[in-house]
Length: 600
Image 1: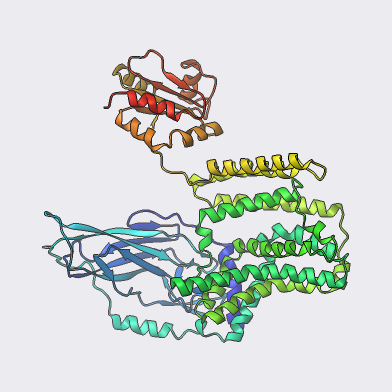
Image 2: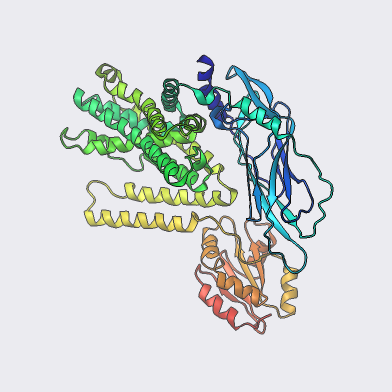
């Protein structure tokens, strides 16, 4: 029992040391601790034949993958997920003989894959293939790789991505000698039978529910819950001023908000299993840039609250009449928010709990998920139901304001960490929108007060919402690849094009220029304009003026006599001077001129 309970401590270390790999495209994946490559059994196959893929792993010393989802903590064993077009169908994946590894955190031996090893994926080629008149076809195959890679001191859950390869199929293919031979499946069956004897999936219901309760209890010490600590502390202090009955009811209402979050997770798990035949994979949401960006922006807003930029009327609602019920909705929302904010720091704990729960019947799985919520809610229920503890809390004063402000800086640090985990192309957009959102929040809470006239208050807040929505439209969408093939600024290239009477479009821009980004979005992201530039053979030049020493910066001021960016110029053959645009919306005018040009 003691050894099994160590799973929780092991899982916490997974998150603490979690690192992310950068998936490499093609037929190789490489991180600092593992290299993964794919090899085909035959260079060419024919319809109706059988072949296989060999997935080669090479791990650094002392690193390993867990071999079984039943014995691996949290079910984070090595998994390979092949996929291909209809012409190819895959058979059971063949793993090698695992090694025994003593995990000092779990206090027992586990079966792992380490060093150099190979996993085989047999497949068969359909005999019903339509070939072109000459040659054969190439069938694209991808293999997804998932699993925790661990050492004696840390574990990582990288996003490995997929391995890609192409299987060449020809009707008259001479398959020749195989590059490798598949292992004996009898040996594989013996390994599988032995692994299934591990006790992880056979925990008693009582023990599993106790483990779920401990997992929920541990969520209260996660640093990601710190954002709501000022609100929770203020709420409890205010409750100490109310009657005992009122304090208990408000505390239980807060706990109900926590349970509501986990009830939503349990409901999502039921829907996915019943209607879609899949399970809720805890942690997948953190692979979504949108979710991570949303969490970061939420923390920015909460930091502004801590700095006093705006207020949340939760404490005042508690202080209202006991019979008004105004504070209950705020208590539920605060509990729900506390549970949400615990999720970024609880990946490993909840992943382990969910892995067990989702291997059980739906009723038991739902109970286990709800018990996690009970574990998180219990400390608040105990604290608010014991008046003696409430009376020992210090009275509210300046220390609370300083505490709030200090927490605000912690929130910003966590927000920066989350934004840093975003794909590089999205980071700047989220950072810019965070500033716009912060200004909108300041307008909402800083430009109005209790005495502001109703009409003025509504106008200011409508403007704040409009600004936030506009900022989201400009900065948050995932940047698409550039539609126009821009060339770097080169005075010689421009001069040559003009001498040969080739139209030239110069876009003067800078990384720090927000207006330039608007121009990029509303003008140069238009497909019709990009198509015309290609059809008319226009030389498109991107003149970067981010740094004063850049050649384009010198040319902007000394050759084209422009004071700043953004500015775009179109040189048309036969005209001495270019057409210039200094505003941010000139797409229609540019389109008209481009249409008048002769096609290349």
